[in-house]
Image (cartoon, rainbow, N blue to C red; front, top):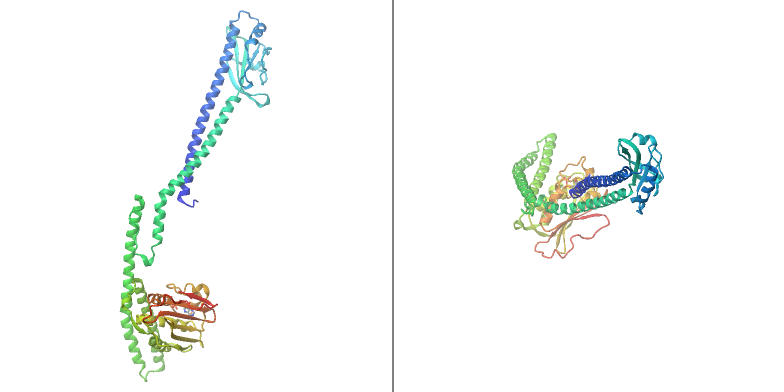
Amino acid sequence: MFPSIRSFLAFGYTLIVLLIVASLGVGIHTLVDHRLREDLDKGLESRARQIARFILSDTDTDLARQVQRLSGGINGGEPESDVIYIRLYDTSGLALPLDGPIPPIPDATPQELRRLKGPAIKTVVGREGTRMRVVTQPVLYRSAPIAYIQASRSLAPVERITGQLRSALVVGGVLAGLLAGLLAYILAYQALRPFSEIVEDTREIGADTLDRRLPSTYGVDEVSRLARSFNSLLDRLQNAFDLQKRFVADASHELRTPLTTIRGNIDVLLLDPRLSPEVRASLQNVSTESARLTRLISNLLLMARADVGSSPSSFRPVDLHALVLETVHQSLASTEDVSLSLGREDQVSVAGDADQLKQVLLNLVDNALKYTPSGGQVTVSVYSEGPWAKIEVSDNGIGISQPDLERIFDRFYRAERNLRGVSGSGLGLSIVHWVVRSHGGRITVESALGEGSTFTVWLPLFGSTDTTAADPGGPVSNRSLTNL
Ligand code: ADP
């Protein structure tokens, strides 16, 4: 629901502050409103009592004449909302004519007055919607009412003050909420910054940089503890990775020796002219499959080495032309319906590891033969161009689509539409890529679906130091081209 912890905290704090301000506001408002009404009621009651005392203390018992005298003292020149309106009723409930402003409320009915035992107070909505507070009380002489007094006053001043208080509380509350949200956001940002740093630092750690570690202090104890436990997780992961790599390397190495023996023995058996056609076919099948297995194991071994990192000090001069001839000769044995031939041949040498370069050639030629249908043509060329030795393996096979071109050098990637019917591991090209890069070279692919592909390997010529100036990308054709 919330995109980040920061926004969650900001929202939470805003809500909490709004709740606190709202409950405080309701409390203050209720208190002030109650006190103001209480004051107003007390004022009205004391005025009514004052008039009652005046009536009772007057020796002239004629109410009409008392009214005359009262009129002079009642209702001075206050503003309309501050006026205390006085009404006087005789015992029959008749309102007596007093001077001064007429209250904006209907007169009390005789029944209402007769029910009164003491002062009664209520709120009445007067003319023009004015809300009035009204106190009505009998004037008792020897427990018998001799008149009724009604004192009333507008509630407008009280409502004006409580209205202003309400607006101030709402505005203050909203401002406090916004301020709290902003402060919470800033505080959360500051508090969570070490976590963002840890995210950035961990992003830089990948399968090939597992030896990196996070700094052990991040300013905040919790985050530093997280970094330490992440580092110990990395230790365990790296150990597991190393173990796995060592296992692959050892196992591949151990498997290669018996496989070479098997292939040697089969080749010897195949020399026997007395073999029946069925047995010969089976043996040839075993020979092809064990050759495939040898290639796979060599790839695995190289992959394990790639993970550990190779040492360029083991590089020696390698006759690339001889290596190409050897590979083509070897591959001819495994192809019947696709023709494999040599194209341009130059005598070129490079500095490198002959076994690894042989594997590059085997993988490229093997792929070209695999992905070219019967009747197709595969050509292998080796020549020099400027400071570069180039090996070109081109076919007129099924070709590679643009999206696949982006990924064929990834480990274990196999183009979806080639999966059916063609065996493979998805390892060959990633090994080719690694070997070529570790020899200071590059590889380019030019391919068009249904027309064929050309893989070109660029390696620095033996003794050449000038390869950085030259462009190993070569001419870009308008067909799909990947340059790695
Ligand atoms: P695989 O064991 O599948 O051949 P690779 O790593 O050697 O694995 O090749 C990766 C993918 O690249 C292959 O699955 C295939 O789809 C594609 N590919 C490689 N070489 C060619 C080629 N000469 N023609 C068409 N597609 C190819």
